[in-house]
Image (cartoon, rainbow, N blue to C red; front, side, top):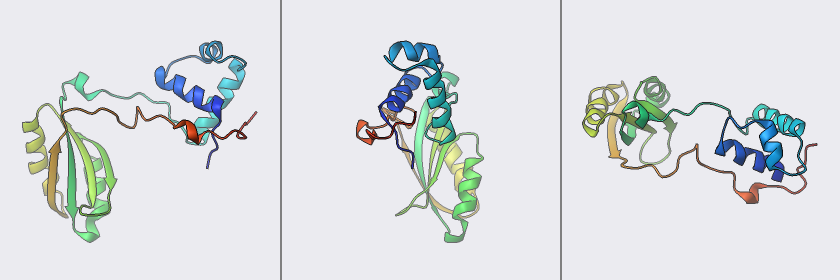
Length: 162
């Protein structure tokens, strides 16, 4: 487990503010932290899989205005294959195994609720092994994984890496 300290937390928060922010700009904003130290810290955070540096697509900018959570009830011996099949579909942006009433959870984007309905009914529900689908249209997402921030109480005072 990676032990994050206050400097790491501040660097991550600055990258979340602007993923293209330069190390020199971060050094200007973080008193007592050098550009070199910031570069080292970013490399370490990436190597330890604490952060990924990537582009995040906004589906709405592409006309995909509708969003839905879909839960799949699946034959017991088909869970992994159904999840893999769902992950390969172009309208699916999230796939996970789940425990409880349903076996696989997916998120779907589309141009409209009607498009999502047709997609779930004609494509997802016909994946071999799917017994039942339950769909909930999501009118607005207030927070997703790309906005989740490391809670300050995760910071360890003795976690300094320099």
